Amino acid sequence: MSDIDQSISRYTTGDLRGRLHAALRDAGLEPEVLRPGDLEEADQFHTGGRAATQEVARAVGIGLGTRVLDVGSGIGGPARYFAQLGAVVTGVDVTPEFVDLARELNLACAMAGSITMVLAPAQDTALPTGSFDAATMLHVGMNLADKQAVFAEVHRLLRPGGVFGVYDLMGTNELQYPVPWADAAAASYVEPDEAYANHLRAAGFIVTQDTDRSAAVLEAAAAAQLASAGPLATAVLLGKDARDRMGHAVAAVKSGALAPRLLIAVRPV
Ligand SMILES: C[S@@+](CC[C@H](N)C(=O)[O-])C[C@H]1O[C@@H](n2cnc3c(N)ncnc32)[C@H](O)[C@@H]1O
Image: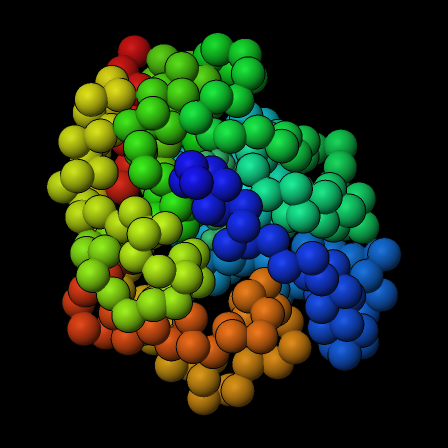
């Protein structure tokens, strides 16, 4: 099975739309008419949640009119946050269930005019060369066997001077499984930050920043546990074994086996 097929098989549950609609109704909301903030943490499929998305946007310099590519866009939480800042966003993802739901949520949030969701592999998007000012990738690299191939495609899609923010769990692949992105080590492609930096350089980028966000992520995880997360938590995205999967990932961050790191890279002019 290719890494793309492994991702589709891991992330497809077939009932995510029903789970999310039920969670929205539990929170007193109508799924057809939403504001992006209404989804709280339920559309942020990465450690650190909405606060991490805000940090990525700030570090990459997303603002009014920025043309943003979001690689592995999930159900579109990061894309909708970037669009709220005034950006024009294209999300690319391989999981049909996520892309369909992302489009529906964009419509419900009245944001379909500023966000396009494309069902395609990030390795080969068929999008026009040099058509983005910025690119983001949040918690996707753990599903990519050949990160350099994706980074080369992002390099092609960015204009000269364009900025790429990669926010992934980095470290060792020797983990306790299952984790949110994989059932077993054979479908997991975690690498250390030095390897990411090398892949980015080999694809033509200059790496300008490498930040460890472990402290912020552990603080957010502890706070969510204390507040016993409501219906609109990241766990909705994972379904029945969410607790185990997220628990294994958080334990790995605590032990230092994994670190949520934000790398910033620039396509030279
Ligand atoms: C953990 S989720 C993160 C989703 C989103 N970035 C977020 O933070 O909310 C990983 C996403 O990467 C997507 N993905 C995995 N491999 C991909 C590939 N080769 N091309 C595009 N998307 C991919 C999956 O379908 C999934 O939506």
